Image 1: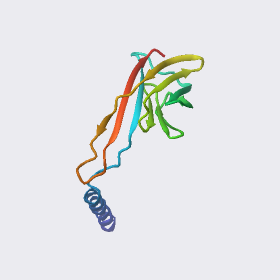
Image 2: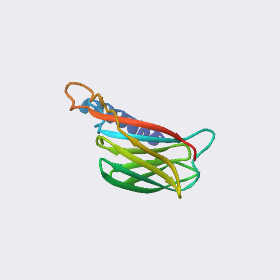
Image 3: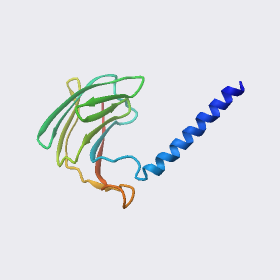
Image 4: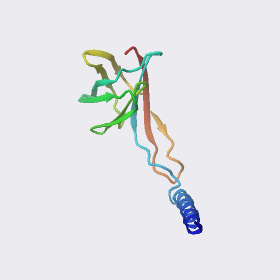
Length: 148
């Protein structure tokens, strides 16, 4: 029993030592990346129904299409090329890398269009963490409430 407690205490000490060492080695924190983020929420009290959805987008002239599902029990993560989608009954979250100047977005549930919007993002520079860190990144987002 004493040995188990010693090993546990040692592992906690190593975890703390490692965590503090990481902060000292990387004062700039996590690397940021430029992005546009789309938030689509259902109007209350509605929720997104479990089932298949499709995101269609024209991103600076490039067509993108992603199929994904909403699960009634939990939020699910999908990779669609270099785009990331988180889908749940209360939120569909899509991250587009880079700084697209214009996005034409359509979100479909079967044959029903939930969202059809043209977006021209206004980016803000995110702080990189200090003068010794690399340049900051640019980020913008848009939020829409839809009736599912």
